[in-house]
Length: 254
Image 1: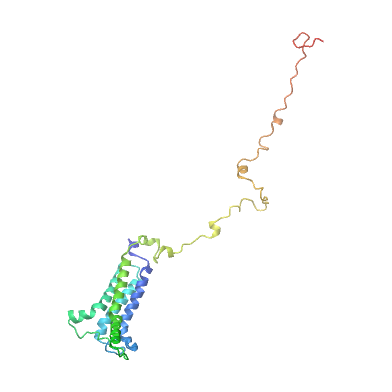
Image 2 (image 1 turned 90 degrees about the vertical axis):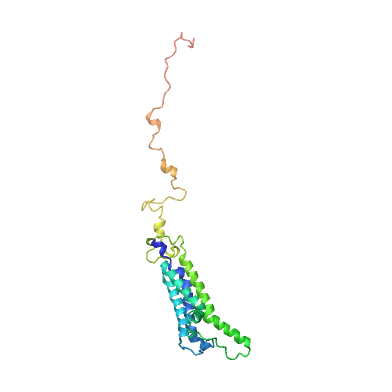
């Protein structure tokens, strides 16, 4: 059953790469967002607090580790675990803050509030910008991570006919059979010349149209094998009959 548990490494490559990028974004955006006026309070770059640790760094790290497992593993259980870990990190991005504040009763662990962008005088524009900050820091990032984590989980749980091949068939670097080039014999070995030994070295090749046919090769000419009957049996001569007597029938009477 080794072929069932081992899968092509590239099966989770795209999902794993996207999970790593999304996890890195979710973990780092609270620290670098203030450079672009895209931040939660406190509006200071590289400021550390417990809210950023438990609500951004931890779920972002979980998504990154899960993405690395999905990207690099060739083992089906490890890939499924990576997809589950990344999906759990995405779910924490979405629901982590209310769980900590309401269920765990730890109001001190808070992500803060969205910071309105300076220079906006219209209240509707400020509200829209704060809504985009909420999506970019937590909600949209968490939804995307859950989606790709579930997609990776589904791909690793799928068993195709190609996966049932034994490990010995493809060796340690088990890849798609279509991407595993097989040695192809050279043209000289694959298509051997058919007339190389037909005419020995030094013998003149017949002109076109004078080559012996298959019938001539199988049934050679009979000249020399069966001599003419003239030499074996001499030509027959007319028999000499004695002259008829004068009184025999048909004899001339003179």
